[in-house]
Image (tube, rainbow, N blue to C red; front, side, top):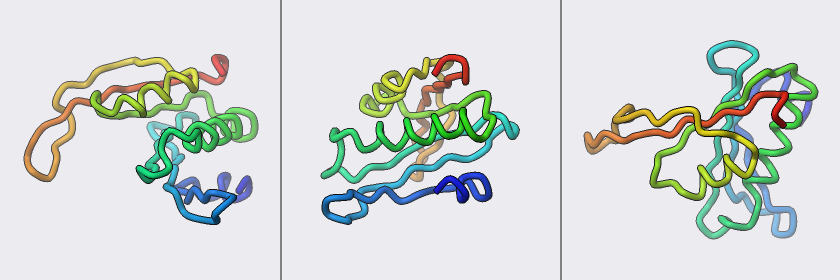
Length: 123
């Protein structure tokens, strides 16, 4: 994974070791510049609240800061996604903003987003 991260930072499947089953994915890619990366995750409902997203995100963040010379990692979620923003906070990220009506759903409804970040020196 380390070589792949440094050459093509995109989405990675999350596979549960015990069952060898895909349980979701995590993405990690540059945004704004080469020193700021965005991280995000999607976990199948049956596999949520088991620590998988935390384990994967923590590993990617540690790798990014230690091996890729990243200065800042950001993440976003909608305010109703309590599990995601609680995970961001557990990872040491802080909420830097609440963007009003910045995402439009396919049904035309506008949604808010929370913006979280962590610096290399804060991990």
